[in-house]
Image 1 (cartoon, one colour):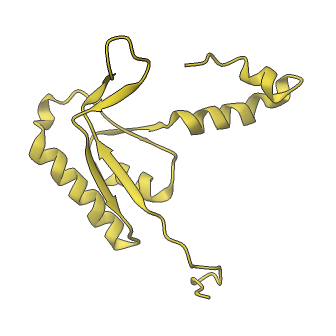
Image 2 (cartoon, rainbow, N blue to C red):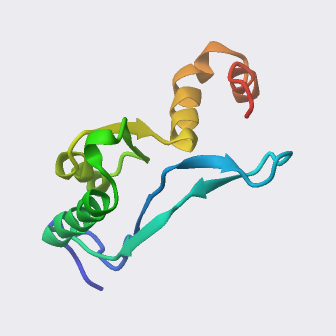
Length: 128
């Protein structure tokens, strides 16, 4: 068994997936399903300094494919992992947004004590 510097089990890897896209549109005119507009995917298994290089590669892609002075907003939509938040520091002009799954999870946790059950608390949030 491999251990890290804190003597914790170290036999797992985190696959890092980042995708850059220009927007979201319906799959078809009457569809409730959505698809990404012009997606480009980055995927790595890395740690430490390689994470910074990963974000630099993403930023290079963005600057080479878009005229950043005309881009209105760049969002980093994620769960808040440390490697992801490092991207905020590496990518200029980024706004961090907690993803919908984790936002709902945290809101439920914060408000579940206000009602009789978790289902009652969930009823407070509109369904998509």
